[in-house]
Length: 154
Image (cartoon, rainbow, N blue to C red; front, side, top):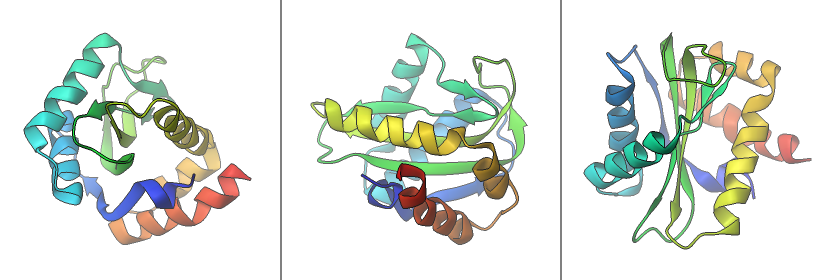
């Protein structure tokens, strides 16, 4: 599995700083809805429900909001880079500016875990995150994310 299999070019966006964590989750849901023809309200509800179980801010400015969605056939993702970090209740209490939203079918099981592990491993690399933060063009970010997927998994 590679990020290129999870991330459509239309699923990458650079945002100015949203007013709140909840607004950012809404923006992620809207992006996923538009990129994959999903019901954005359902995506938002699923993300919020998952976030209420425990924050998905993993540290070092990165968050991995994720949810299982009915009707989805395969794992898909969206990537958001914020112009200015915001509080996302991350484990290290640092603000977040890199977010990868991951969505899986309700019965995905191992596929969902493998996708989450891939995204987590990829965004754990500080040099890679610096490269993402240095670019504000969605097409360039998509290229960086999908081109590096094979390198990160190797």
